[in-house]
Amino acid sequence: MYWDLFIMFISVGLVSFGGGYAVIPMIQYEVTEKGWLTAAEFQQTVALAGMAPGSIATNAATLIGYETAGYLGAAVSTAGIIIPSLIVVVLLSAFFYRLHDNPWLKSSLYGLRPVTTGLILYAAIHFGLSNEGAAITWGIVPTLLISGVCLYLLLKHKLHPLLLLIVAGAAGIVLF
Image 1 (spheres, rainbow, N blue to C red):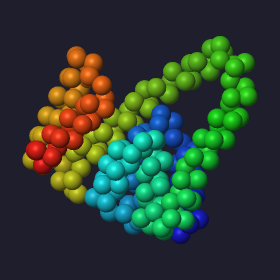
Image 2: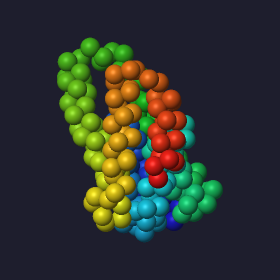
Image 3: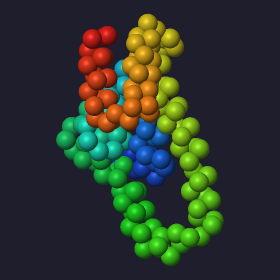
Image 4: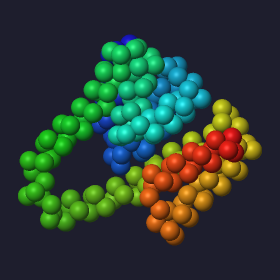
């Protein structure tokens, strides 16, 4: 079990361009296919991981590891997801200063932006609309309302994201 957790999360860590939200669909596919968590349990895990400080992917890996194999599973999963990033950062930091003006490097990094944006939007839509098979439920209306109001307040009035999290949490308590 520990080896399976490590291999799965190290493979996720190897392709985690764009941050944790971009790899959430991959983690969900792997975890539900292996039967470690149900879709509902995974959604709860991601919600909890998103509330904790730090990368959502690392937090989710830790929680999934703990749920499936206890404290050692949490440690193995966390190590698996952070080792690729650690290696890449150490290797690239030695060379990046010399290459930061290279047009090929700049172009390839700009090319990753739309893919990353698409993966994040997919994760948001997937989690916002999925409810164990039902594509659209009555719970979506308040969810979209909270999301829309928060987006408006963030863009138009430049409210602090922490304040919006508190307001959205309170709205969730009232509406759900």
